[in-house]
Image (tube, rainbow, N blue to C red; front, top):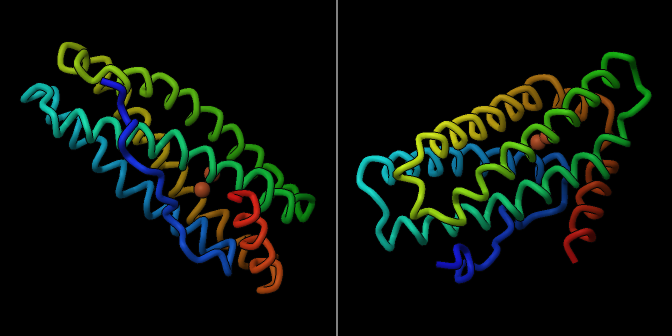
Length: 174
Ligand SMILES: [Fe+2]
Ligand SMILES: [Fe+2]
């Protein structure tokens, strides 16, 4: 089955009037999809693959492939440069967050293979371990950004800069 071929891409954000708001919307979406991903993998391990679960594997595969890429691009190309060189603490934080992105993308690359061939998931404890690792890595990264990074965006960026960041995010999607 070609996973994801039938599911259209839907951007979690529909309002780009504030760049920080876009990032927050994506975080909420990631947390929700993380729960769906673990539920799917556990259901396949316990009960095997049926048509609905195969479609769900395709939907989640397409979601993460698109949405993770868009979100990291928004952060790395638009938001990180805006608050770079404000302080050593922020620069260190950004460096760490960018490294997290690489780890998340590496964990995703492994999981992507499993979601593309969901008929093999049931016989593979490795797929479930990989899904848990990916979900936890992304969730902990989001928690770090929510706690440490977003307050710095609010502190350093004016409402106009947040609006401009949102405009640039919308532009990158066209
Ligand atoms: Fe991030
Ligand atoms: Fe983020």
